[in-house]
Length: 276
Image 1: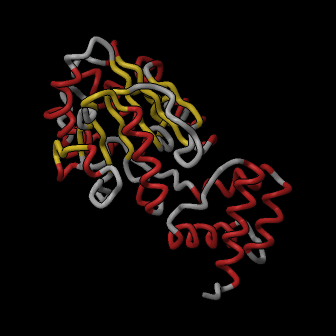
Image 2: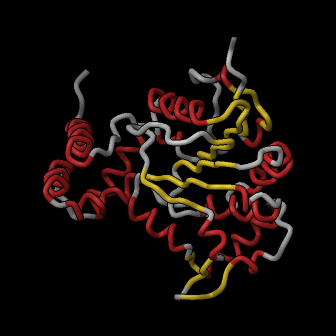
């Protein structure tokens, strides 16, 4: 099959990015990747994808700019409130039985999800014995997440999500207006360890009781989805929990028989015990 020139250019671009910077987008879903690359080309003023590739190869700042388009750093606190409500109802009672907890938020973007989980754990009396690992491949997003500052204009929608997610306090108790935004409580920030990690190239780094990776797998092809699910399965302790995004599923994956549904509508699963 003969490929159109832009498709060839995109393949060459992602290969060049992998060889130059070690970020692997070769197994990302092609339709989504193409849309984002072409948007980056236009916004960055490149005459073609090949011209964009030349700039990115020779200018690390240009690559950092491209990465903002390729990784879609968009999220909100307590996104899909039903997911967090299901965590409270079905997962937290089991987590209480552990003396200590490690939780991995994979693809954490600018930090909205790990901060949401930290608030939930605090309200359930589990934060003091928990370590949250929040990982992403986008360094700029991670730096923003570490600051724990979010736009004040987002607080209204975040508050609505929090209330629908079963929040038990006043959401405003968790932040103060500062630096032109909402600065979240230091206790929450101190409970989260932010780190670079690629689901495409890196290995597991810790045993965990809960992995939350939402709205990330939809950007991967089947091969990369299976690789990521393999990492989550390896990371999770026996009978640990996995949470996915509302449009994601374990069905038809190579790991479908390694998990059982806990709340299928909310995409929460539990790792099965190892086979004898």
